[in-house]
Image 1: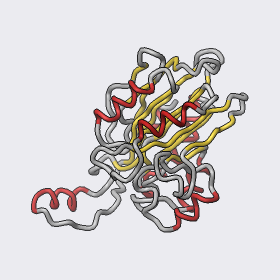
Image 2 (image 1 turned 60 degrees about the vertical axis):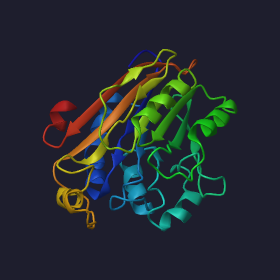
Image 3 (image 1 turned 90 degrees about the vertical axis):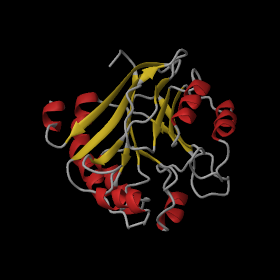
Length: 271
């Protein structure tokens, strides 16, 4: 880690019980190796592959996650409506209507004394159109922000929307990291004005799956158009994450690294 840098880790969408259990297994080793100041995970798929509940959130917090971000599936379990009213460490997207339960951001105070502003934001292209414009929402929000270190989890489908947001926020946030598609992109870099960027950091769930779900029902739907019940896949888990080092006074990113850990080799990878 660069001297005196603040280290942020964002873990890709945690899918179901298998994803949660793999976080519990691997995260202690990740923290021991990288010594992050804050660990964030996208938790909107943590309960049965769709949604979040108190039990699944607690498992991730107990494993060492500090903050959970959300997305379009954050409401898929009824319990979330009450949970987000009281659990400030779980974020729903900032650009939902102001009347929506929960918060779209929080400041996490690190042990080193540097506050980190974490924002959950949701795209609109190919997604739920009823959310507010994410560009105007984050623009207005950042005008009121005085915290130098800012990480935005942009939960969006379209690559172009994510790239546009990255350039729109370049120099205004420390990191703009994409989630939602569950497939990591090979474009982690620091943009011209100091923002760490990656279109999608991936997921934590079964590698032998279709975005975390068992393959056959989805393949059959593409083949004949008939919807079947999707189930969370369990075999061969992976954990995708992205690490960002930030200069605390300016909020500029100094380093970005994307990592993937496999069930069979995570011990060697983290040795």
